[in-house]
Length: 68
Figure 1 (cartoon, rainbow, N blue to C red):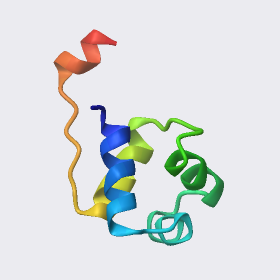
Figure 2: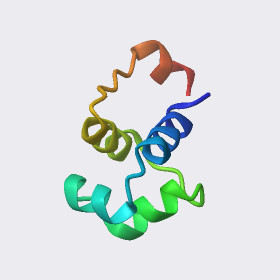
Figure 3: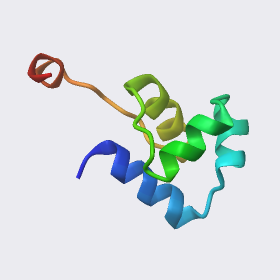
Figure 4: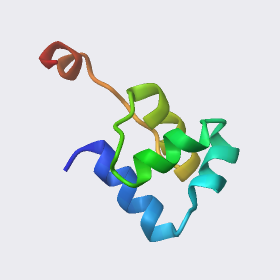
């Protein structure tokens, strides 16, 4: 399971709306809405902002960066 799916599942579990996430993170509503519906993928910066909102901390390793 990748980080995007983990974030989506947690958003669903906590019943957060795209409006709430957008207001709290400063991300555009359309970005959050499309991400939560699985229509759009997001980069590390946006994923980190959503993760922080959810109370998580993303840590990207240099090994992961080297693999992409």
